Length: 463
Image (cartoon, rainbow, N blue to C red; front, side):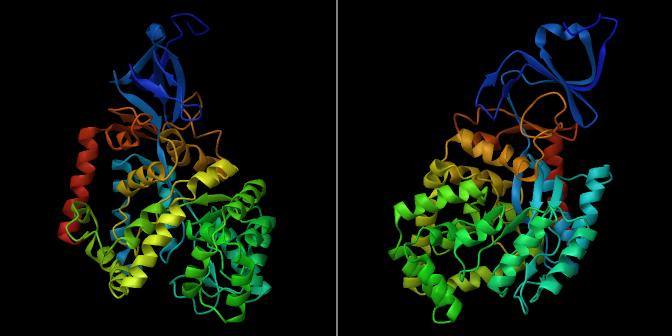
């Protein structure tokens, strides 16, 4: 028994008994333990034989069920303009309902609201997943994206970083629409000096290793890893920088010049630099195969507001205008990019699960999308354990939050999912959710269903 006598009873708010605890870091299944939760944290994980030493306000019998830490979606977006703020806020319960206890907001155009939600969730005023946000992202002049901090000089860069520091952004996001290559690299270096992690796209006018060597913390989307595997990457980058080649025209050349030896070499250097990869296979798969899959009758659209659904149109319309040759190229690019996962894994690159769910990104649904992402990660080369690690261990690792997240132990945040089936045997078992515990608060299956029903009713009513 624990030190002390039976008179020193542990008073817990919540006890989870009878479950199989999955140690996601090692893949071990731990039996015969009771998880005790006080407040927002795990208080103890004790042997089931020591039930005399605790008293819990609520006890959950999880016999024959599996407990894992909550899932992290490390690439989401809240956006679409001020008129869609409430529709974006309505997405928060969808994450809870699908066991997503933390999200990383990778920039959009309603940052003041997202920052407010982040703080209200942290204080307990608002129910939702914990939010890490970049605030507005860095871009060049006349970016196609709304809400960016547009910069073209080091002075403008430093002012932008000052503003992001002031709003307490959790990391820096940089994309590659119009930003100059030299300012892009300066952005990474200056942000690093200030202690920020940096997530980004990589301009085609640079090599991926140039961005990584400058200090890029994570590369978003697999297409950049395909470019990095080209034996002609430096030449292609120079052609794009000179204006003699466009990004779109470069892709056939990238596919033709793929070299596995180059890929392995580059990926090992990415790992050495500590640059992680967020594959976002979900959005890539959906957009690549819009010609084959009609999503207009997806049941999950019932949970997405009309305004957000309308933001999907630009991708759908653009894909519909593609020629047969362009469609075939979309398929080839996705399949080749996704096939690189085993090479990244073998090189030691950290793979982090993220979906790109949110506005603009058609049919990648907040909450449910991460389960699709995990299935795709397994389909294209990860084991179920590795897929779980990408969504449970590697997100906290990115932010240096391993002391609070990543496994089930004393002192960890009480963000947990109780599953009906073993996800180590079948990754789709992450969808068999019996209950979610978010910051110590229990959401039973019936309560999760209520969250979904309430969201559907709001959407149907138009608010």
